[in-house]
Amino acid sequence: MTTIDRRGASGEAKGAVDCSQVAGLFLINGLGMGNSTRCYSVIQRLAGTGLKIHVLTSGNGVRFFQDKPEVASLRLVESFFYAVKGNLLSAWRTLMSLGELGRRARRKHAQVEAALTELRPAFCVTDSEYTVAPFRKRGIPLIALNNADVVVTEYFKRRNKPRNLMGQFWLLEYPDYLFHRQFVDLVISPAAKPLPPPHGRIRRVGLIVRREIEELARLTRPVPPKRAREFRKVTFMLSGSILGRIGNLCADGLPYHISVVGIDGPSNGAVTFHGKTVNNIKLLAEADMLLINGGFSAVSEALALGKPTLVIPVARHAEQYVNACQVVEHGLGALATADDLVGQLQRAHATNAFIGRAEMPPAVDIGGAGQAAGILLEFLQSRGILRRPSN
Image (cartoon, rainbow, N blue to C red):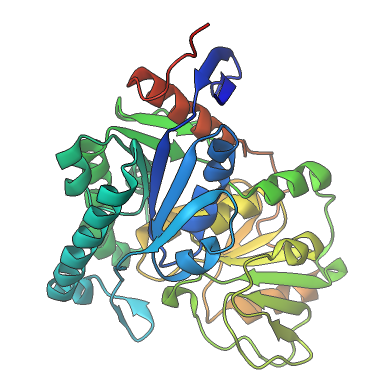
C-alpha cells in the first residue's frame, strides 16, 4: 500500500492518505507548450504519491510527454485551433470555423469515451479542454487548471486597453470563465498576485512553473541589476503555437546576441534559432534578458526568474495582453510589438537603460505546483476517492 503524508497549500499536515490503485487522467490542450509544462509540474508531485497518471493531449503536448516517466500512458486526441488572418488572431474567422471545430469536437468526444472505457480513471484534470459530457455521464470529478477568472478580473480593471481585444475577450475569454464556473467541480487558478477568488469553486495558488525553474529561481534571485550595455545574451521564448511566429528577427545592427526557442530559422552572427527545444533551461539561466510572448507559462517563468523582460503579446488576444501587463506591473520590463522590438533593443543599448525595469523587482509566489497538488489531493479525499489507511 502506498501512502503519503499530505500537506495542504498552507503547509499544515493533513494526515496520511492511501493513493494506491487510484488512476487519474490529464486532458491537456497541446496547441502551445505552456499547458503541458504547467500540467507536468503538477503531475510530478502527484506521481510521487503513488497515483497513476494517464495523459490525453494533442500537437506539441504529445511531443512533450512522450518520454516522461511519470506518465503511465499517453494518447492522442483531436486538437482545436485559433483562426488567423495575416498572422493575426481573428475572432470572426474563429466563429466562421465553428463547423470544422464541431466535427473535431465529435471526434474528440469519441476518443475520450474510448479512453475512459479502457482506463477507468477516478478523476480528470483538464487544462484548456472542454470535453465534459463523457465525464459527467460516468460521474467522474472534473478539476481544471485555469485562470480565466484572473483574465476577466484584470481585463475589466484596466482602462485605455486596446479596443481590438474586445472580440477575442467576449468570444473566448469570458465564455471560458463562465464555462469553468458551471461545468467543472473545482478550478485551481494560478496568479501572480493574491487575488481573492470570485467564486466558491475556484482555489487560488501561486504561479505554476517547471521544477527546474523553481530551482533556478532559488539559485539566482534576487537578480543583480545590470545596465543595458552589460547585457550579452538574450533568450526569446516564442510560443509553441502558430500565433507565436511574429516575423523576421534577423535584423541588422542588433546590439545583443539572441537565442530563439520555439521556431526554426536562418541563424547568423546576431541570432541563433534553436527550434522547438523542450529543455531550454540552460538558455534561460545564461540570459541577461528575456523576450517572450504573453502566454501565461512564459510570463510565469519570467516573473519567477526576475530577469529584464520585453513581452510581445499576440495582437487582439486579451489574455496575452493581461499577462503582459503583469510583467510591467512587477517592474520587470515593458510591452513591445513585432514592429518596434528591434528599435527597443537598440534604444536600450544606446541609452544604457532598460525601460520598465525596477531596481529590485519583488519576488512572486512560484509554489503553485505543490499547492495545486495539495488542493487536488484534499479534494479527492473529500470525495472518498482517496482514503486514510486502516491501522
